[in-house]
Image (cartoon, rainbow over all chains, first blue to last red; front, side):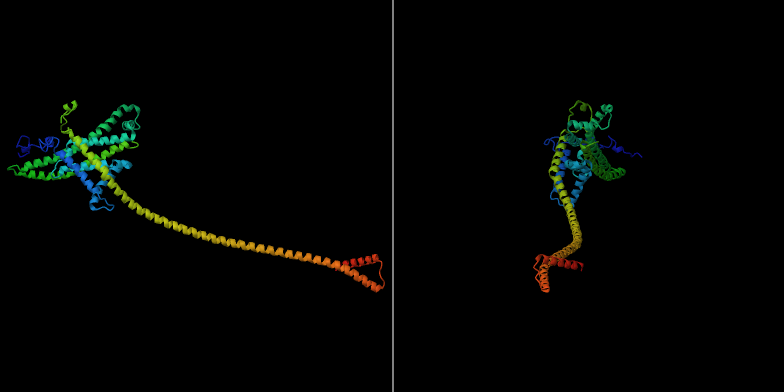
Length: 267
Length: 181
């Protein structure tokens, strides 16, 4: 068999595999709108508007006996309120609930943009937005710690774990500093970004490759393979829906967890 | 975006480097707007509804508990009253018993005293009458006796002293005879 994947190898047959360049967007209206006014920007704004409008509609006219729509809204609200905020933050959850609810909704909508018509691109596969949210979460959990324990009090609590012998402190303090103040926001941002980025890349591989093969002239095998590839991309997209929700959940849970360790009474 | 620090310029971060620094700011600003809406509108609305709901449920439960407590209180009150009434009745019965006993004793005492008083007064009256009688009798008997004796003897007993002695002796004899009887 000499079929192989020859036509898809670079340089042969004019196929360009999807790659990093597919995540680079130009201005939506070159020359008129600035460079940063690109598709991810528009998606982020639309996502935020969707979150605001949907929650605004949901929060109007809430009844003690819920309607079907309210029941659905309550389900999501309680998922964040009881499942994330209250479980992790206990009695302090009410203060942080607005941020956590907004964060989860914003992440979920933008992640699911990757699988929705018109958009077909997850906003957070642009690392800048992920960095932005991670910085905000960092500010919140660090700020909550400083507010509760004072500047020195929080540093002492965050950097010196209880029960560590004095001679280990020169090692432990830098490690704790790195863990609390540096790696937490970076891992938050990168986990979200990488999942979205890789997921979208996989979808693109199946869609672009499948599209290329299905239109390949005079080769039924390639065409069938392309069809299978396109069909499989739908399965991948279902997986991506799940991963999008999972990443939104993880980001929110970890933010709540970091806030919790900042304000908890004891380690 | 052109990296600003030297380290980043040498390090090719690839897709990990934001294409536009504005992405960070946009992300933060959008999230802050969402946060404010959640904080001011959505979460208060939901929490208010939950509060109302729990109030309603709790209110119903509280009302039921209050009714139950009221019924229990009424029962306890009734039982108290019943036992109090029982006690009262027993006390009254006891009192009546005691009282009747005292009344009886008092009456008896009174009767005893009265009878004693009557006896006393009767006795003293009798004594008084008797002594009065004796005095009268003594005078009269003396007169009569002298009179009688004078008539019998037929002579006047002018010697008063002797006559008096005779009378006295006679009387003494009478008395001793009366006491011996």
